[in-house]
Length: 376
Ligand SMILES: Nc1ncnc2c1ncn2[C@@H]1O[C@H](COP(=O)(O)OP(=O)(O)O)[C@@H](O)[C@H]1O
Ligand SMILES: [Mg+2]
Image (tube, rainbow, N blue to C red; front, side, top):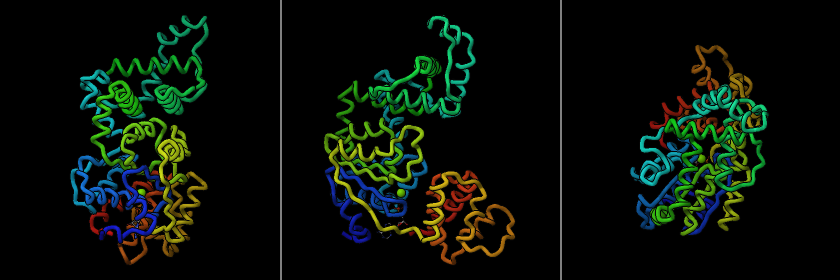
């Protein structure tokens, strides 16, 4: 089949390994997303209907790119290519209300809103006094900063659903209960709740789960290194009946470690699904320059705007006479006469974790501007 000829040997083996759990491990630029898009095409060629295929990626941005690549390869516009949260949102809209898991007009709140609600609770005398009354006159005390609290409450909520044994302060437990109550009263749910409520619905309503296990005959998940335990649980739950599941990820790129994504999550998946593991070794995107910069970035884990200057010697900049940041970026990074090579560089840079917001925005703008002009 023609499309398989565009893959290297390892990619091809992973694409052709169907109907059984497949794990693909590889670094950035080794063709993981290409493999996923091609596997979708392979399923279509095998006779699976597009509606029975689900492709998931971690962020909206990654899901958009995946959808675009699948569409370019398969010309299939109706593929369900989404994020975990998008998937959960849709299913909860469909069944969650009638089955009593969410209110019919539920809204999802973001990190900022979560912080606001937590901060309100922490300064609410009624709550603090009630805690004191109910805890032998002990003051309510929490040892973490507000910024970290969102993540801690989130971990606690997720682990509780999974029945993980988690040692936790009484105050944090009471705070989480109060936080959940307030969400419910306001008819809002947070991002964790989207997944928690979906998993609870699947556990308590086996018929709904079975319908979806049968419906989603092929499941593919990209960027698996950023998956948390609850998402891993959900993926296994959905696919264990048929085992036709492919997960793809780069263990070195996990950016969400601090929010509960475990570096060994792929290993966990591999063990519980007894998956076959494929490793991609050949890198298609990285020139030595990009690799050097990527490695420095991963080492330092923090990149201020000066990044452009810090690493500019890699790109052999001659003139530093820039009109503005946009002009500087163009002259610094995208020096090739071949716009496609520049676009590849931009995409490679955009994958680095820890870029400053300014650099990230400039790179995104660049990709957006040129992506649809040059197909490679
Ligand atoms: N077998 C291959 N032959 C030629 N180019 C490839 C191959 N696999 C991937 N590529 C190209 O390499 C680049 C990186 O691929 P991508 O799938 O985005 O990698 P990853 O998801 O691992 O970061 C893309 O431009 C892609 O088209
Ligand atoms: Mg990718």
